[in-house]
Structures are given as C-alpha cells and as structure tokens.
Image 1 (tube, rainbow, N blue to C red):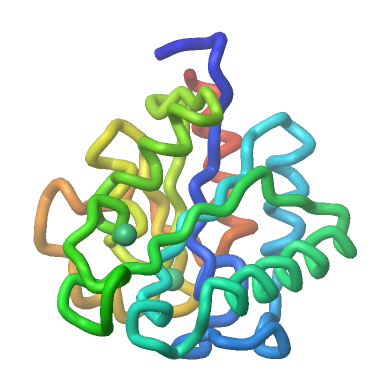
Image 2 (image 1 turned 60 degrees about the vertical axis):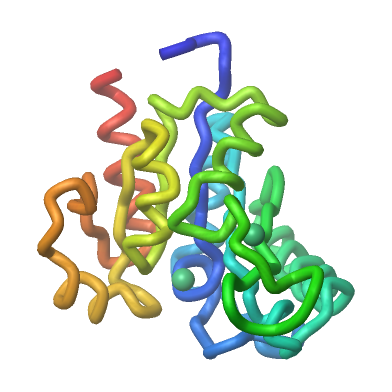
Length: 196
Ligand SMILES: [Mg+2]
Ligand SMILES: [Zn+2]
C-alpha cells in the first residue's frame, strides 16, 4: 500500500458505463447506463481516478478503426461531462489473438483478462493497485486487476447476469462484491475504502 499514490476505478466500458450493443462502432450508439455518470461524478469528487480499460477487438476484426474509436470516446466523454463527470484516462486493446490482420492480430499482454492495461495505467498515472478497484460486467474485467492486487466488483448490467450465473466456479475469480449497477458498485467501494 502506498498512500502517496492515487486510488483508481478501472472501469469496463460496454455494459458497465454505457449500453452493451454488441460491437459498438459509431458514436450514435453511445448511451450511458442509468446511474453511471453519477458514479463517475462521485469518484471524481473524491479524487479517485476514473480510468476506462476496454477490449476493442472490433478493431482487429475490422468492425471499426482507431479513428472511429476516438470519435466514440469523445462522444462518451461529452455525455459524461454534460452530467458533471469526467474520465481521467481511457486505455484500449485493439488486438485479437486469432482474428483479423496485422498489426492487430496478435497475442498481446493488454487484452483482458491480461493485466497489461492496468499495469500501464498504474505506472503512467501513479496508481496504488492495492487500494484500487476493477468494475465490469465480465469476470475478465475483474481478473485483469485482481491478478495484480486490485479488488473486483461485478455489475449485473450488460452481460453481468449471465456471467454471474455461469461463472461462480473458480475460487480466485470470485468478485469482491456484486452490484446491481455502477452506482451501487460505487456505494460499496466508498464503504470499503473507509476500512483501509
Ligand atoms: Mg463489458
Ligand atoms: Zn492488446
């Protein structure tokens, strides 16, 4: 634990902050989930870094370009700012191990559940992983952080319900908490932080 470093919320994007629509490929498809902006705003207010960590294999698969992804992220930021919330950073993995073409077709260390994006954020932004949290609607969103010391909160939006029903097996995958949505996840995190 390093109290000189910041705490971060590593947030999955689709199904966690905005609606899961399959492969989101245009800004018009960006719709915030209820309570998501409020959760981010609460984190902002406490100086907790809000960092999006998102797998975007749609780029490898040819569903969208990196330029289109930037447009989508500008739209996401615009909708959040309208609600008084902001993201500190967005990291994405454009790769896929077996689909698509060079340079995107490769076994990388950033595609969740690998921890590459979390580790990169921690080093670039000065994040204390032991006091940080991964939040997402899939176990992979939690694992990428839990492997390197964060806690993990599963949300039941997006694919969350299916994921929770299907995957309660492996001990270490067990989430620190299961929340109805991002707003409830944030409330639990605030309570949890009181104990640290
Ligand atoms: Mg998701
Ligand atoms: Zn990658």
